[in-house]
Image 1 (cartoon, rainbow, N blue to C red):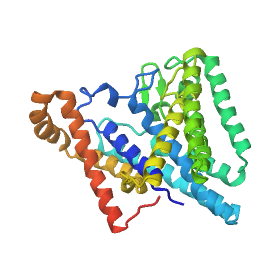
Image 2: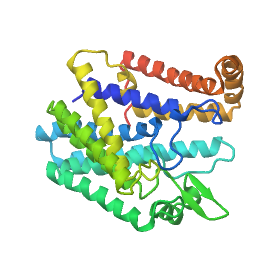
Image 3: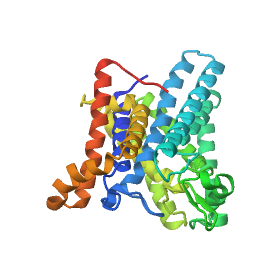
Image 4: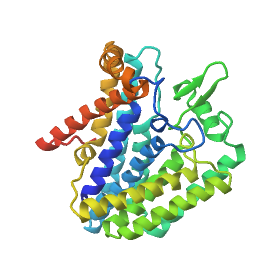
Length: 354
């Protein structure tokens, strides 16, 4: 079951991801295009959680329809596990490419696609074998409260919190950040913090049920309630918003915002017939993300990236508009290339599935 607004939001989210990930000059980036250094939540911090939320919505829309039609559970579960494994392996392969092509970059085991693949597999199995809404809400609540308790026991300072301790012990130099002098590691897509990101996907599954039954007002009210609860949790109960730890308050704050975005998009696109801007990017989301990764690696390894940026963007735009604008313009142009490529693929009926 495809809903135009969901594809559109997914596509716009991927476009925003490319815009944030591909600055021309990392020394000159607008604050709203950067992630919070630790505690806090910038506009850029909403992007990945909204994508994870849509993963849950898509699971509910696809598997719910098949289960209601009487599809047997075992083949569906097998398909879910295989797709999750393929997404994880693609993420590992992209990290291998980066390690081979980019000088000074070591191999990183985990990452965005690995987190998506793992959460997709677990949430998909829940959709097949744990269909009861109350049971899914119970799992969601247990994850949020349990993760809060785990962090509360060790604090949330960089390097000292439980998530970083686990990544240091199990990932070491295969983590996103590793300090050889101290032996400390940190990974924003690390092992323990993947647990609350699963909660985001489960929240998306419940949102998907409301979308599927066209209870869009309920979706909007729930989104506002989740944001309120997340904000109160962050401000009064010592659980700050933190993307790198994916705190429970962050789950509710960003998930609630994502639900409001989906409710608005549904009203405008599926309800009032607005054009589904971003749909072409949305139906080939992982292909766009993987393609942009490979393009960045190849441009950097070939030595083309820096001269291209400095000659075409910085030299012409920075004197008049500033270095931050030139850096953003490069990211916007890079994103536009993939936007047009995905639009062409959509027009030709091409769809890359993982």
